[in-house]
Length: 224
Ligand SMILES: C[S@@+](CC[C@H](N)C(=O)[O-])C[C@H]1O[C@@H](n2cnc3c(N)ncnc32)[C@H](O)[C@@H]1O
Image 1 (cartoon, rainbow, N blue to C red):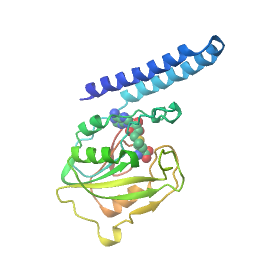
Image 2: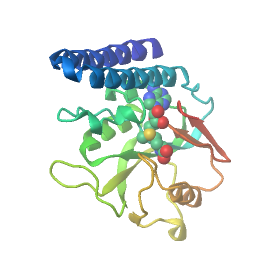
Image 3: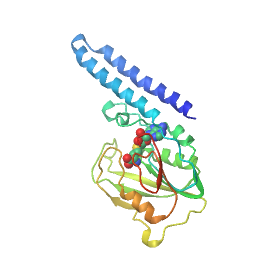
Image 4: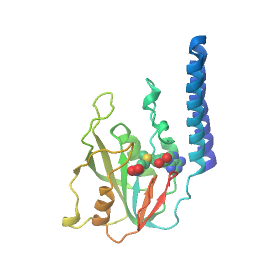
């Protein structure tokens, strides 16, 4: 499966480089030095992407009751490369995210982050992983970000279930809107782990696309 994913990603990286080369060719001689500097940065970027690909940890084995996922959604930013998420980490096609074999238990719950523009894709992924959409909560980041129609200040945490994982007790049922100031790029509030653990205590927890480890949880990702 990863062979297929790697080929696709390789192809996509090559396309990005090609675009940059075309741009370089258009520059006049005076801009050459500046262009060479830029090119070195892009090469560095590409090296980083290649390195990340080799760091993908194996998918944990088991049957997890709670799956928490924050996928690396791929956006097509046409206007400016400055906004490209790939400057932070490699992204994935939705079809490749859907193909992941998620080791969820027969009765399990999925907490899935989806940005406002990627809502449909998030629902597609949820279904492909075998979960049925139930509801969502909103993270109010307290700071506006980018956005073409709205300056986006929130992210969605979708819930899907498989079988009958049960619902949290009334006291452990979190509010559907939580406010927490956004910190680093793509980082989600650590309070979400606490919310999940309080709502579903003593379960087998799995985080997909994790960047940090947490006691009692297993992780899958490439930045661990
Ligand atoms: C949106 S970020 C997750 C951020 C995380 N929830 C946090 O709070 O820090 C997505 C992560 O998926 C990783 N990723 C990208 N492609 C991947 C792949 N093929 N397999 C595993 N992880 C990948 C990225 O490098 C990044 O660390």
